[in-house]
Each structure stands twice: as C-alpha cells, then as structure tokens.
Amino acid sequence: MTVQSLLRREHGMAMRMLAVLKKLLESVEDGTEGGTEDLESVLLVLEGYVDRCHHGKEERLVFPEVRKAGEGDMEVMVDELALDHGKAADLLRRMKEEVPSGPSFSKSDVEALEPLARSYIELMREHIRKENARLLPLCEAVFPEEASGSALRRMEALDEELLGPGRKGTLLEDLEKLSARYL
Image (cartoon, rainbow, N blue to C red; front, side, top):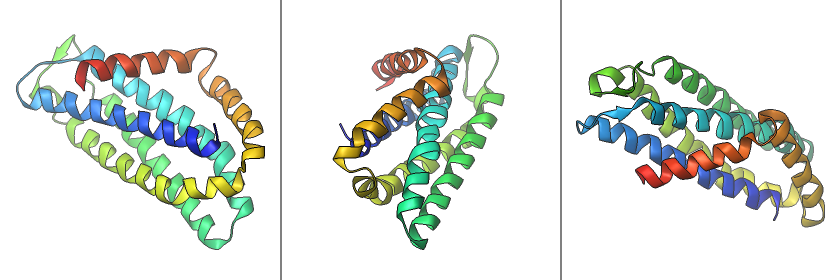
C-alpha cells in the first residue's frame, strides 16, 4: 500500500458516509421518521474518521511534505485544501448543534440541520475531487514507494494519537453498519 492508495481508500469511505447522510435526509424529506441515534452516529463518524483522523493526517503529514517538495502553486493548493478542512469542521460543529432531541425526528425537526448538511456534502464531495485530481498525484512523487512504508507507519501512529486506541476500528464498524442500513 502507498500513501496515495491509503488516502484514495479513505476518500472512498468518506464518500460512502456522505451518501449515508444524504439518504438519511432524503428519507426524512419523504416523510419517514429518522432515528436520532443514526444521525448522531453519522456525524460522529464524519467528525472522528473524516475530520479528525483523515484530515489530521493530511494536515500533519501530507500537506507539510507537499509544501516542502513543491513550488508556489502547490502552496496555494495546500492552502485551499486546508481552508476546506476548516469549513467542513465548522459545518460539522453547526450540524451537531442542530441534532433534534428525542429518539426520532421528522422533516420539521431538521429544518435548520438540512441546509448545513447539504452544504457539507457539496463541500466535501468537491474537496475530495480536488484532492483526488491534484493532491494524490503529487503524493506519488513526495512519498515514493521506498518512503511509503515509513509514512504509512507515521499515519497509523497518528490514527491512534488523534482518535485514541482502537477508536478508528469502532468508527469503521459504524460506517459499515450505517452503509448497510442506508445504501
């Protein structure tokens, strides 16, 4: 496995969770009551796995190495991607504030949450497209295969540091359960 393939795999998992969030909102729009527990779980996976873990690895390992290896245009790209991370974290925080209380919710309960979630989904989909098209090809040069092992070990250590022991596995299990339920 290379740094590029790991990041691409994590992007795929993030896209699945965005699809789950979209389906959950659509089911509520169609008149089905949504489960507050599922909505909270989706937001916890997005916050833990995508924001803290994935974005944390990019900001603490990948972006600095790309900056070191690059010229001005890479600096601008990394700044744009980091700005997207900040916007996404803010939208997640605001969504969590709007989660309805009680075991279930209806369309009227999520009127404030829905536009935030749609903005988050749109932002993250575009962000992932940018990273796949612009950042990941650079990772091949910045982290050549012979250096990938060391970088991957550092990424694994960051998973534990950013989330705590075993937490990534729990988040991935939740991602699988929610995907099976909504996709």
